[in-house]
Length: 159
Image (spheres, rainbow, N blue to C red):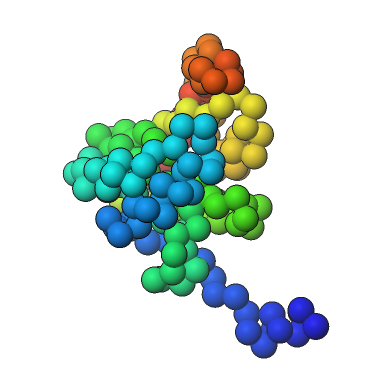
């Protein structure tokens, strides 16, 4: 029965768009569920308003509520991904990959040729995603994540 419903009413393909101030509350909720120390909506509003920041969300349809986000700080020709997360109930559906590919394409269009990010060494899902996108490890920060005592891996992508 479910497959018939899905064939008659297929789910909307995810849309990737620039984040706006009105998304700040939803982004704060996603971030709080994904990380030990969540950013609040005021922090997201500040980031979205910054000239050197690029933020994108993935949503159901062009005006849907955010299901995930990515935020980068850009000083061309380099960018650093500050945070990326997908709602826990939407993970494993390719949303993170679609979001990051679109985000990186936007950065490339602005003259960015190198992207950096840090990821907790034990975050296997994130490491697999970044590996599929072509990121490689270029460094390690011992004990960077204080709550877990875990190392941060510094990854780089040249495009």
